[in-house]
Length: 140
Length: 169
Image (tube, rainbow over all chains, first blue to last red; front, side, top):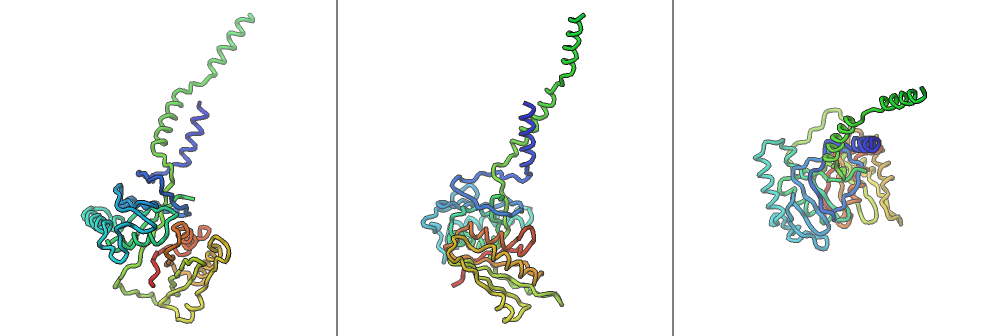
């Protein structure tokens, strides 16, 4: 029993991280692996799977044939995503946290998605006042 | 006589046993705490940005080395490299451009890209920005792999500032 506990303790201590993801991601999202070492800031989170786009916990749009439904690439300001992000920016501006940190979006995206889909979302986010991103990846 | 010796031996053995209950209690508490904070996926992040319109004036420090901005275009059939700089002349910049074809291989020649970027970094050490321009059909995983190659090479920092942009046609 002591041996089992010791092994368990060593394993848990070895994998211990003070920066733990306190959120769950939909099982359909398969994140890419990377050698990145930076920690993420969980301010505003956009999750994109092959079928759905979430902003935080809320479903914002559906993805069909690689295109975000309701997001016209030529008129991104008319989309729900843009309006929600503007609201997020206004809310963040009122908070007391560091400006650089609050204007950062954590972008968790399925590795099989094409850049065409991702670009339409990051472009909209850029227009809404979030030009800086963090691409969430799994440690290699 | 023999019986009393056996009793003494048994008594010694009993005294030699360590009481592990307090240790187990401590272990149990620590294990529970660690299990609560255990993350089943180790999430990390790559900082990036999209190009923004800015009216800031870029002032190069007098006597500074050439600062390049490397452009990596990920195309269907390969990777095209180019460089931009306010400090270098057009001819120098033109010479720095190259193309790595995928040929028949399913994967992109990221090792070739890595060694070329290392050469650029050695030649122009003040350069720190790379603009990645993927074609619309390029998958996210390929973009992340290219970012990894452009940012670091075996723990050596190459171009840590990554900007991602769509192709302007």
